[in-house]
Length: 375
Image (cartoon, rainbow, N blue to C red; front, side):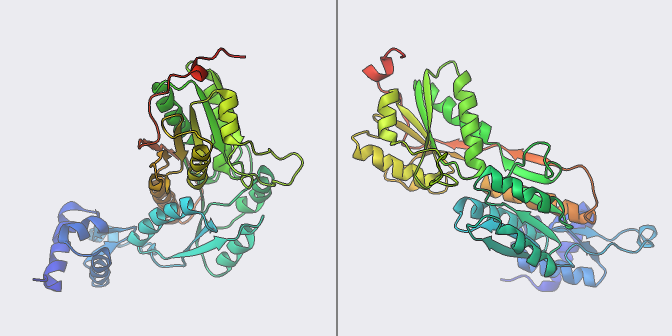
């Protein structure tokens, strides 16, 4: 039987008065109602002057002495938060869901903007969103190359609203060095993958990665650093994961794709780290077509873990905390807004990924290749 509205609201008041500030989502779970229903109750109780509402929480009324000061403008009153992400990017869309949940709990609207795959596409989108009243910005620019990344620094640094970059780490000392960022620690993700593979006895490992995003470039740098210093890695190499995975595949200076099966044989490799999921699944099929079985002949780890587990052989994968990055970015922006967008120390947050072990990795095979002397 459904609980009467008046009784439910009395229970809300009792909980808030006894505990102090209480999250709306926690109250909803405790009273077995939806967050939307609970938020409606809190708004009505606030209108009646029985409690206060704020950033996703219900608070008891202040003592009379504290009520003398005019109340701050509620955070929920105002324009939306503009969220800008690239077109057709499943990884970042998962991050978006984490941010959306946080904003919904705070009663704040978001305006989602999808940037097309064109250099500089984000700037006019952001300018229109601000002209329409957006009061804050979460953004993950595409940044296919370092040049397009650098070109965006100046205008992003001049934005008049609180801004948080998601999964983007601007160059140290750049105009964006003091802008809030929330990222996955991709160095640690590569470390997890290589630690898993070397623990299984793999000594020769290839990274097949994209080169058209900040994440791809971070993975390449981390892999080279870790592999070069790792005492259990004899030989390693980096290859482009697909012909379209470079910023400008037609440029003379662009990295040329190398067939992964050929490189594996030349190196005597028994394991590969593959970025991202779609490329990883296709490369595993290419290996099989060349007579290289996964995981019997070659262990494979994907990096992204959006669809890695859906392959014929579910792929072991480094899994960045995509939703958590979105939530952390949203919470960081909300704290800025609560302070009226005032200046303060910028925060550069990193969240650790984890490794999902599935069916594509196993003990290194005992072959003449793994025992071959180094050239």
